[in-house]
Amino acid sequence: MKVLLSILIFWVSLSSCLAQSNFLQAKVDGYGGKRVYLLQISGDQQSVLDSTSSLNGFFSFRMPENAKAGVYRIVLGETRNSNFFDEDPKYFDFIFNTGNISFETSYDALVEGMKVLESKENDIYYRFLKAEGIYQSKLNRITPLFELYGPKDSFYSPLKQEFAEVQSAFTRLCVALIAESPASLASSIIQISMLPEIENAGTPEEMKLFVRDHYFDLKPFADVRLLNSPYLAKTILDYLSLYRSPEFTQQQQEENFILAIDHIMDAVSAEPSIYDFTLNYLVDGFQRFQMEDVLVHIAENFIEGGCETDSKALLQKRLEGYARMAPGKKVPDILLLDQNDRQVRLYDLENEYSLVIFWASWCPHCASFMKQLAKWYPDRSIDIEVFAVSIDSSRFAWEEQIMVGNYPWINTLSPDGWEGKAPKDFNVYATPTLFLLDREHKIISKPLTFREFKKAIDEE
Image 1 (spheres, one colour):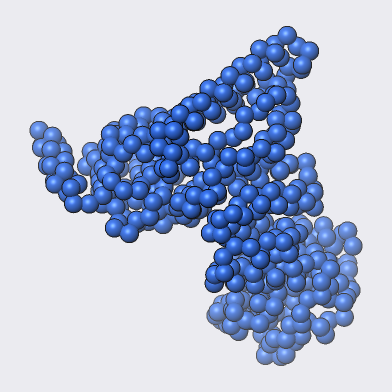
Image 2 (cartoon, rainbow, N blue to C red):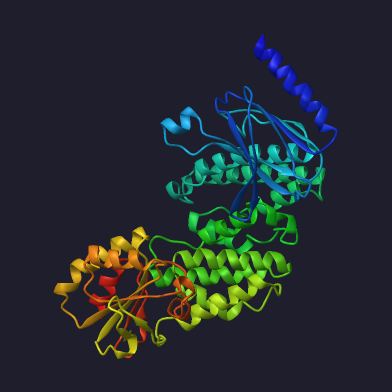
């Protein structure tokens, strides 16, 4: 009785507020947790806007007055299940523009069990999400069969027919949903999520090539509301996956990604803000994997487009740095003090090879690399010297790590950390960053790991 009374009070108090502002209210059956979080989504970034407590699965949020039209996320906080199985908390998304939004769903089937009680746009959105899930499930079962049954097999023709009918039915549904509210964000999300219908199903490779050629035919890249959603980033990532192959070498993979980037940047060129987002998203991603050829290609071909903003100026500076520090280029000199306060400079090294390392005592990947390098260094069979530059802000932490690790090479400290001359000259944004140089201090390679470093050395 007390539970029913509490729920009644909850809904009465909530109803009195709904007339005053834009609210989200929801009931999640089976949710045993207490904390619920409201997140704002921008590209591939998420930020917490608010949090609240749930009462037997009931909760509500007042949307901020300055909330932009876009996709927002409800994260159901820690639960016994997520703690026990070490799983991430569950979540579901919704579209906010204006007006109140009301949902009912089940914790075990957040999307499949979703009932939109208030908000036409979210009703359209969730009808699409449910249909998309069924559609993908069917394709995942049908597509592998094309590898099993060749064109001469009697099953091949009905297989193609079934494949075409599944595609056509899903397309008709999407077109009908879009027609219900053509100017809505839900409509743009449906459009950007749709893949082209494959006209003549064949081998998986043939179908992948068809999708690549027609991927951007209907994408609504003029709708800037998509910036406040995960769908731009997802669209770019999904397209790049069409150019990826585990059989490629690093060079082949980068060459293929460059082809993809040309198509992506051409597709988003009409809207400056979406162009800028795409450019930054690509640079951040390829920087993470240190694909230098790709970054240089972006710098040389696409930096002039888009908006004139501070972020563009910073991006341009970063990309110019990648072009300047590409393999074959001569690196700038480094002049710093070592742990004994003696002045050392990179250009004074006359070894056949030198390895420049930017690292930090607090970096776990650095510690792993330095440990392997310190074990290899005393018995090295080639003429190579190591020139290590720490970006530590604490001299004590730097010196302690040198002593504990027993690093027997040239050790220097960038006194201004990331903002020091050496990290800026070498365009360093992460640790560890490695440069393998020849006798003329030209870049041979920029290995990511000790294994890559050893491979580069062994190939010389």
